[in-house]
Amino acid sequence: MLNQYQLLERTPTPTPFDLPAPLARQVGPLRILPLYRLLLTGASSDRLVDEARNVQYGGTSELDNQSVRLIKWECPATAFLVSLGLTNALSDRTSIPVSAWVSVTNAMALQVRMDLSPWARELLGPAAELPVTGLIITESHRAIQTTDLPPSSRRFTLQASAGAQPVDRLELPPVNFAALLSSKRQFSNLIPPRIAQAPPNLIDLSEYFNAALVQTWHPGVTPNYINNSLEELPAGLLQLGGQVFDVRGIVQLAGSDLQKVGGQFPQQITGIKINQTCRQLHFLQAAGWRSPDGATIGRYRLHYADGQEQVIPIVYGADVRDWNTDNDPTVKLAHSSVAWSGFNSAKVVVRLFKTTWVNPLPETEIVSLDYVSTMAAAAPFLLAVTAEP
Image (cartoon, rainbow, N blue to C red; front, side, top):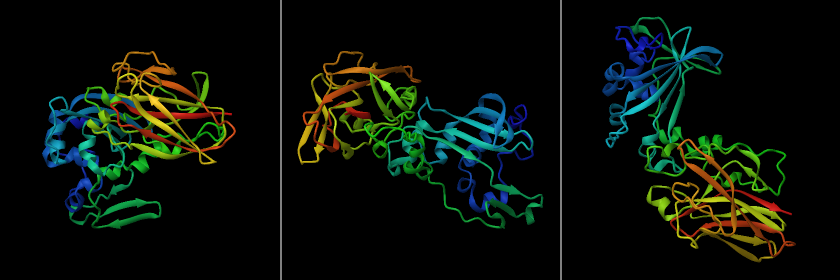
């Protein structure tokens, strides 16, 4: 497979996916290379060659200044899931997509990627800090080299920035899938940085985002749910509905239907910084799931510098509707308008709404706002707020 699919031919020599046996016996491949372990675990390694399906040669490219061949295939899922402690594999989840970037010069896999999205919630469990519906693990292999010594005297070299250090035994903890997808580390990479030139009236929601445009943040049950996102919406300063917004992420609140399918989002987010006066506030927003028209699904509570407060209700059918038109094809809104719509990878028409609120106290500084869900069936979410001076 690695040279015109040589990996798929049974040979007595080790494949580039094999770890040195002494090292594997000492630490177990899972403690060093989690994807290799999925490929080599006892329950699945014998089946890998026989059951690899839909093998595709993706041509040549460059990775880390090395020429590589891209190979894609699908591996049987059942053995992998059982080795990871999962026994609830469904009949329509029988294969795992795998991609490998293989060096042209030495036939070693420099990078392996495995899509475990259908089992993300089971693998990560309650340890995940954010609701996760997709799990794609990409693993780079640049650290381990072996000598040509016989197995009885073989020592292994780990390369680090400070130099190479020979070792006889590695004491490494088992892989923690939740740590591999630590929300604080990985999620921040999904949110583009705020443009330095963005004016302060485009409210900075960076510290409040809890979902990404490219992420399927709503759990679902349809086959295409893992592609149901706002990835078609470009990030940055966008003029939508005649107003400029700083669009980079999503602030999602809880709702009763969202909770029923496993979504774990806060019921309220308080203290969103505004710190300015304005005549109007423009909200780029929508909802997940559907409520009856006229139902209040959330509210914004504004806090002024002089202690006064104003409450802006979010009413289904007046301010927002379900962002997925499959669930609510109606476009009529009493107080808002469709600011953006697109066709995403789940083959669903999705949309966002612009709501404008006139400030009755334009001369008084708004210090902050709270974003609150009423826990109706529809769960409100916010992408951007712009204060119009």
